[in-house]
Image (cartoon, rainbow, N blue to C red; front, side, top):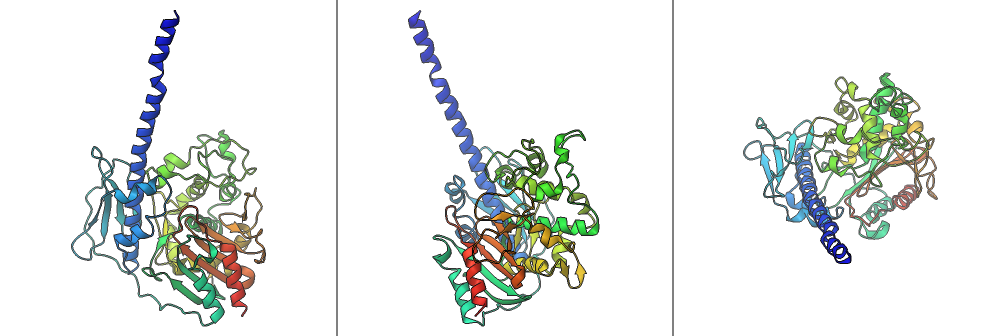
Length: 451
């Protein structure tokens, strides 16, 4: 009997190890698919959106900046994957798609380009349909670079490109405006005023601005239900647009920060990933930073986009080099996937300094800047508070208490200081583990402006 038990145990022992090995192989294969999607999307977005803005990015530049220092384990895979950039014709024709090979038995990962909508990542296994050839679009000529006229400001901007605010930080652009005038800007070699970069979560503040515009038009109220859930009796119907903007929906998310890799790099659609998470807290009681919440806030105003597309507001603000991209089904990924220049983001900040009025036209409700910068919902731990789509500097020493900011991964910042009429834009491609001390940089820039 004992011999039989020992024999049975010996037969069963390899099963967990085998299962683990199978799972590890499956995870490794999935990581390659994600890495290929990441590479295809960034090559497509960086190159096509730069050309749309009238400038150039090379694959080598994208590899140096956007495709290095990314999260593990994708950072170990991206460099080895072969890619191809297909254009719609000869010479200067626009990018049609970028393909990245990742497995011998599967099609490449594809990011397809539309001149008006930017790049969209197809699902794993998806292949593009034939498209019509089109000439490359080039935007208007850019204004000359603004050199700081005050030595203290020039020195502060220069320090923004040094390790002073974070070891390993990689600044690509700094721009400072006061009273509606640009006082100085600087770019790292290979970047310039017309070079769009991915905004990452600065897009959440753009999303909050679009919601504000819908509120101003009377299309929605932030206190209204966002329409989540399957039926009217679904408890998720209690989640309001305000809850979503304040990261207080009470819904579950599977990773800290809600990385949403299947959507961002796997080619999943917004509806299949962001809408279905269950409720685990009463709405409005717990702060949980979640891409899914912003995506559903945008979904709540999606039926207004036919008459008021996001590009319309961007054009009104003069943000001509900003492109809000979508998933392959046309749903905006306004939690992250927007490409914009430092100058365009400064225009966004200026809209808030001007109380939501642009060229005499009210685009946002009169109290919208106060609304997005008020910590009226549950608050995060850490150095910053949270409003509605914007971070707050209400915990930062020697920074005006009314300061709020759009912030994004890899060091994207649009700092708005109403009491000083100042907007500070910092763009970067910071690797994981290295941060940029935006509060300290803000203090130094404001101090320089006092000289």
